[in-house]
Image (cartoon, rainbow, N blue to C red; front, side, top):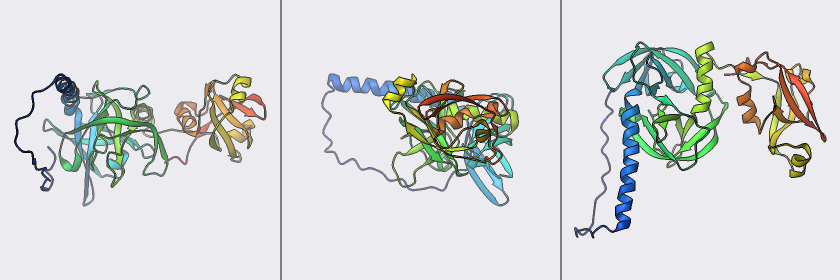
Length: 340
């Protein structure tokens, strides 16, 4: 178990009711109670199923110690946490609820998405199942498990408040696929899982807005899985680079109809770097990027997700709107050497 935090006197709420007996429950109250029981069962089931896979991450760099949360994703010791929890740490250990304290090595991290992958010295860890975030809906149940302020395996619950948020990472880059939730998070929750009602991981808890109420954020699991794939293969996140700067725009309806486009969002190119793949392919300032490999590109964030490690060095067909005509250009992305 993790070290117990300094005792903090809780604030108690005084019940000042008259002491009168409650009125008999009517049918509406019975229905509400049944619904609450169902909700409680969902949260309890998720906590019981995934709680053993969640660990307290302890780090040490010289005399400086820190802690956060993590969770195992495979029995052979793979553990996911936040990059900011383990970055530059000299020693990292994972403490599980069953009493095991396991030394960890850092397999790789990506500060730009605040994701890190650890390997613990074990081959029989309880592990969490990964879900998907593409099918999430605002309002559905969100359950967070972590170690806020050192209180190990703390469970909070709320709802998915918003999807597709952007959040600055510690590296300065925007994380462009972030879930907003009101499931309470506190220092120490970083790196823990955000779960759906089926106890599948839908996000990695990463940040809160200081001083606000119920403004908490998790990196969406679909993005996390892309990062984890690169960390396992290369030890780092690989990103494709084409050398344009742009702004998200909406295309007029008449253009959509005339050009037979299904997506009304695209990228207006505002600069092209010299000797970049985009310049060599013939992309110019003022062009509008509407598709890549026949798939719509509805903005800068979508293009960044498309330019993953698999695109580096491979020919990619980009569809450009120039004036009133659609043209196809072939680019060969290079690796973004300046990525954090």
